[in-house]
Length: 448
Image 1: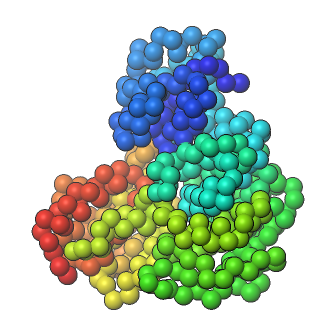
Image 2: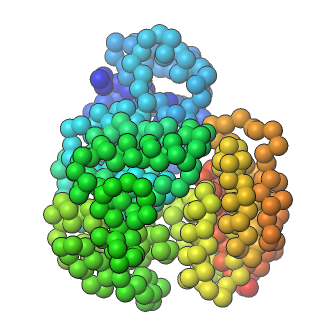
Image 3: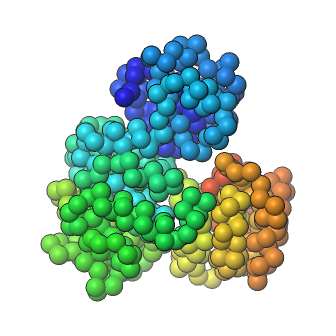
């Protein structure tokens, strides 16, 4: 299937770049296109990839135009009318979606797949960390930059493969997992699924990829059979005696076979307790030592842009990838729990016109939990505008204090808001605005 040289369309994406790193490590020649230069593309170039930012066909390296030697990998985020993608398809190249290539790799390894509309990046990162710290030799493809690894890719052996199972475009159905979990099944990607019923059916098909229900961990309340995990007494795997000590969660882990006492988690938010719980359960299932799991979890430092505290003085600034109403609700709950008396500001960049249309009212409700909200324009990603759908659509439904500002105004507007906690959320290029905000707050030395 895979030839000596590979050409990646969308090589700078978090999932594509992990796959590119894998093939570089395996000795393949890797080339690729992405529309902008980023830290990710810079890193790929440093380790041997040849990357450019022009989608014209004449920018494809001549060596990659020889179809006998070249495999083309693309992400669904690349438009179907991409000139380079059209060229490769029209000329009979071997062209595969990223998920198909990942699925082929999972055939030959003991694959642990982490699925869910929310939580899969953190859960897979925790799991990879627990396995590694327990002495397991792993290859991991993550959907975010693990702070412990400094990367979205780990290649230290082939005893286990940890993979984030992406439900977008039904990509996770190409995998061949031996073990899996589902953290959540909230409505999302309705541009693909049309309705919640189709989304749930796809997750049920994903779960069926593992025939033994005892090797499927499912968040309690979801309509999928397997070992349930949660906080209730009915959950087969659960957390109990949850408390906050010195700014961290401490809890007890209970399963049919194990009780782990006084486990520490240095992440905020009850959703992260659930992510840690299922990661512990899966790590135990492959033979990790319970004592090493407790030590390892205490050392887990999180994932970039998942409740990442950038500064604590003069204002707490939290950076997060939240781009769905459920995720914003989780952020709001976590901030209230850890900063109960603080004035809280949300800065949010909606991601996709279709998602804004489908969840406009829900976005308004979730953002209204903050004392003040600043909205940016919608980040289009792969989509063209939808008439009548703008950030103003959310603003009109909100009950709280809210305004729409441009990126150039953002640092000053954040400082002027006088919040003690600022939460910056979104899956688009809002990440580029975090450091300017932090620097402006430091310069103005605002104290709420």
